[in-house]
Each structure stands twice: as C-alpha cells, then as structure tokens.
Image 1: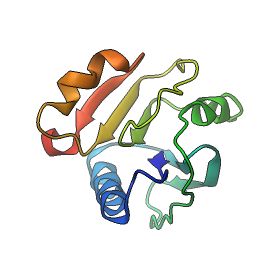
Image 2: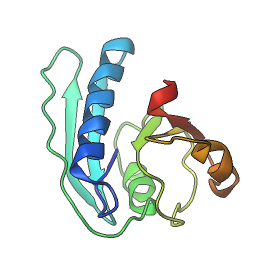
Image 3: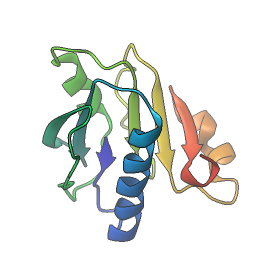
Length: 130
C-alpha cells in the first residue's frame, strides 16, 4: 500500500516505489496487490510473479489507514502480509487485520522509537534500516 496523502511529497513517494521494487526482488510471492490510499482506495492492481511491475500511485487527500483494512476484507485471496509505505500521519488505523503489518517509511533521528507506542498494531521499520 502506498500512502498518497498530502503529507507524502513526490520525493518520498518515489522512495516508496523504489523500496517496493527492491523488496519484490528479495521476497518469494505468487501475486502482489498494489493500492494507493490517502483516505480511500485508489488504483488497485494485481501483479503475478514474473510480470513487469509498473505502478502509478493516485490520491492526495488527508490520511486514513482504515480504508485499506476494510478493502482487504473483500479480497478473494486474503494477503499473507501487508506492507504499508507511509509517513504514519494519521490516527485512523481501523481494526487490525488478521495478517502481519509492516509500516515502512522515511523515519529518521529516533522517530521510530518515539512513535512506536502510538501505532496500535504491526511493526514500524525505517527504509534506512531495511
């Protein structure tokens, strides 16, 4: 999932996409669901293993994470995990999913430790520490 809210600038979004592409080279998967979300789901796409992945994120409203977890409930194949590229600029987390969640962002200078208690579920990881 790509956070495409107003607080994520083009540079950070580009870093998110680069990190996403790097992750795909290092994990084993059958298919990947890519979606954008600011406060609603946008541009959902499914990519199969071996397909060329070209994804264009959409959106630019305020941040809400809950639409992603609601969207997941309607998927035919429930994800094994969820990776959310975000600046964590919201308190609208919604209900936790029944799969692991990894919040990845551009967290520097102790941000990760300072905000970990605010995150109700999942693991927070900095792209700089991956």
